[in-house]
Length: 99
View 1 (cartoon, helix red, strand yellow):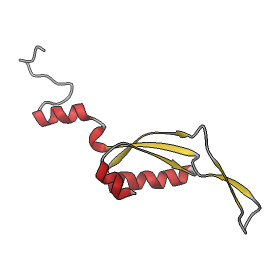
View 2 (tube, rainbow, N blue to C red):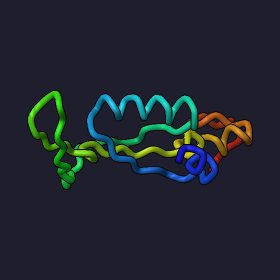
View 3 (tube, one colour):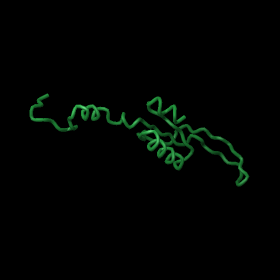
View 4 (cartoon, helix red, strand yellow):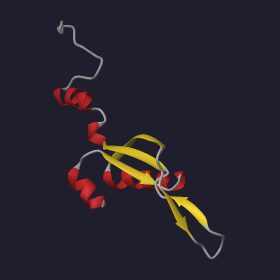
């Protein structure tokens, strides 16, 4: 799925079982795809998944406990990117700019 995300270049919403998995995913998204985490929260509607393990009794896991939203790094500051292309630093104006 990472190849599809890279090709699309659009914002992505993911769901993870716990914060540890979310941290690992965030590292992959930033390092391999150039995406930036813009928000994360507990899912208000997590789906319980019953599971039996030989190491423990019956358990209920929530596969989508945490939600995370990512955007391509190029979309995080589009206005400042446009100014940089024109050679103008954000927040700075030359003496002749009276706009």
